[in-house]
Structures are given as structure tokens and as C-alpha cells.
Length: 536
Image 1: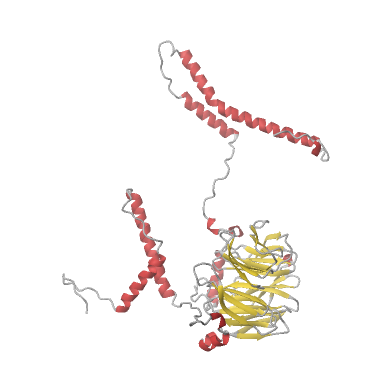
Image 2: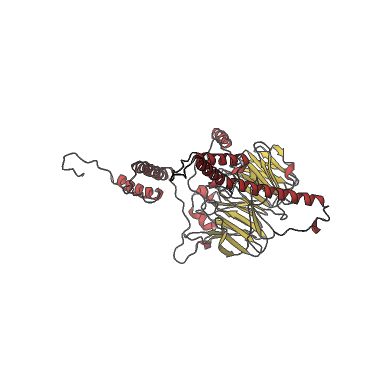
């Protein structure tokens, strides 16, 4: 079957599957290579050529390793709904999807009806394994989504506005009537955060271990949950708002205001990093793409806008209103208003979103929050009568990284992950619009004026250099010792002149400033406005 070489040594024969695998591997490697290799033959410098050759080999090895990892560690592939002929995916109903999927996936379609305790809000852990649900009338519940079992439910007997998990499923924070509270998984109250006040919205920054909140007076608070220190407390100055989201790329908190503006904040500055006018009406919802470069906003003037945050430009404007927005891991955008949900997808290279799926709740249900479940093709819907779950094919990441988020982690793995994440905790100063600036050299600022001692040292060095200069011998009578000494003295004076002129100029400026301040100090404040202003 195999061909033999003329030398007589038989060539190793690869089975057909291995040959196919090698061809597939090559295409995968091309995907991870950093463009075409550099032309090293044209380089004259041998040292540079050697260094670049080593680097090119490293790039090749890393691309091969990434291709193999993709093949063996990412066995699952994501897929979307595909329509045949003139059929549209937005017309496909949940009942039709449920008939075609397997039993474990069909279990993710359900409705929990609790009309006396709603409206509800919900939150998932980063692995998608656990869900926290909070009813407006005091109902708090933690559910294991793997087997749909209730872990714990408590009744706090007061208004609950929001709920959010902390770094793992063992702790969650609830924004109650007067203050936010932190509970453990058993329902035990651990902390009452009185400094936050009556909170409307909560967000947790998992890389920095910061709990961010916005209260009904428009105050933004950042609290470190590991040490309990209040990192930041700022007045936004733009009124009450309950529209708040965290950019997963850089940790910047975005707030939507009633004037149509979106402000972006970090915990180390009292002024917003960005203040952009997004809509003519009040902002009703906003969401960030997982890559952090795209933001979706909805205004009361019935428009949904997709923004490019690298240029702060509008990519697309869609008609319609949304009271809540959310992006999935694969970039699908869910928008809801009233009892109607629509899923928008970007299936082309240009950032243009079109309708992918739709779903209507029972008449009278008012949707409060939409949230995609991580690593599952599932959309959680919190509404006035409880919460529901529907299937959205292609929304979740099909392969999870057990070092980042493991839905099947044991208690030992969870403990190790908690310790590791605490060691990797980022300080609040690392939150910025462009986190790639961390580790780079700061650009030079304005040139500082040299100090008096530095100027004197420079002048002495210049004089010493002039003294050591050999004097040119000239014709008889012109190279006398007296004349050469006089000439050297003139050169020294000429060298000192620019330094002395600069010094005199600074002294004059300083005396002028002192005179100005003394004149202003002599006059009382009520008469200072009548003082003669000098012409500049």
C-alpha cells in the first residue's frame, strides 16, 4: 500500500484520518499565525536576524499549540437557527424548538409563576450554575440550575430592588428598602451596608472585588468586599437613576440618566471619565458586549442605538423601545418591552444587527429584566408574575474554561479558585478606559524648569570646557600672554551670558508676581474689582 523510496528505506505511512487531521491542523495554525513571516534574508545584521529567527519560531510553536488546544479542548461547536427557503428564524416558536432538542435542553424551558411576590429580578453566577431571584415584595431564592433544585429561599419582609452574586455562589447582595445587605447561601445575614443608603441598582466587579451601587439620591458608591473599605463615594449630579452596567473589558461603570446622557466612572476619580449624549429622551436601558468595545443603549424616544466605544460613534440605530437589554457571550442582543422579547443578531462582518428570534409572554406580564445564562443557550426572563426561561440557540459559549468558570466545580476546586482570585485581585487604580496602557511607559510631560543648583552646575561645566580649549597661535605681536588671557576672559563671559540672562528673567517674573499679590492683598475684597488691570 505504501510507496517505497529509491534508497530502499520504507516511508512511514499515515492513515487517511491522520492525513485529514494534519490538513485540518494546518488550516487552524494559519488562523492563529500573526500574519506572514518577516523576510529575514534581506537583513544584514546577523545578531538581529538571529533574534528574529528565534521569535518567528516561537510564534509558530504558539500557533501550533493554540490550534491543538482548539481541536482537543474545544470539542463543541456553537450553532444558530437556520431557516429553509423563505422561512424566517424570527417566526420559529419555542414549542417547535422544544420538540427538536434533547431532554436535558428541553428542561431549560419553564415558567415559575409567583404572582403575589413579583415583579422579580435575577442574576447568574459567572459559570451559569446558580441563579439568584429576588421578588419586589421581599422574596429571595437561590436555585441550582443544573438539577433545578431550590438551595435556599428567605422572606426579608421588605422591598427588594435588586440582587447580585459576589465572587461565587456562597454570597449574594440584595438592595433592600433602606440599605443593601449581604447574605450567605444559607440565608444568614452577614453585613448591613448602611453607608450606601437606599440603593436602586447593584453591580459586582469580580476582578477587583468591588461592590458598586447607585442610590436614589444619585450617589455612586464603591466598596471593597474583602476589606470592607469604602473605595469611592461620588455624587453624579445628574439625578436619580436605576440604569447601571459594568463594562466587562475594563471594569468601568456606566450610568444612564434622565437627560439622555451616559456617564462612565472609575472609583479613583470624582468626575466621570466620559459623558456622552446618547438619546434625546431618558435612558431606559444599556448593555455592553463581552468584548467591551460595543455598547447598546435604549431611549424613551423609542430608539435603540449600537455604539462603538473605541470611537464613541453610532454604528446602527434601530427603531423600538426597550426597558431592558443584555448581550450574550456570542454577541446576541436581547431587548424587551412590555411582554415582548426580541433577539437581535449580527451575522455579517459589518456591525448591523437584525431580528433573529422573537418571543411573547402571556398577556399582562411586564418584563423587568433579561439575562443570558453563561455557557448555555438559555435566556432568563424576570417579570411581574415570576421568572421564565427560554431557549436561544447560539447564544452561549459552547466550551467553558475550567480555570475561569467551571459549572461542575467541587467544593475543593471552589476554595482553591477563591484563594487564587484573591491573590490575583486587581487594585482600583487599574480601572481605566484603555487597560492596555498598564505596563507602558508614561509619555513625557512638559519640560520642567531647571533648579538653581542645576543651572549653576551647567554653567560651571560650560566654563570648564571653555577654559580647556586650546588658543590658536596667531602672528607675531598678537599672541602675547596678556592678549590671550583677555581673549579667554571674553569667551568665559560670553559662555556665562545666556545662563545669567535666564536667571535675571526668572527673578523679574518672580518679583512681578510678588508685587501683584501684595497689591491684591492691600485692597479689601469688595474693592479689588476696581483695581487697575495692567496691560499684558
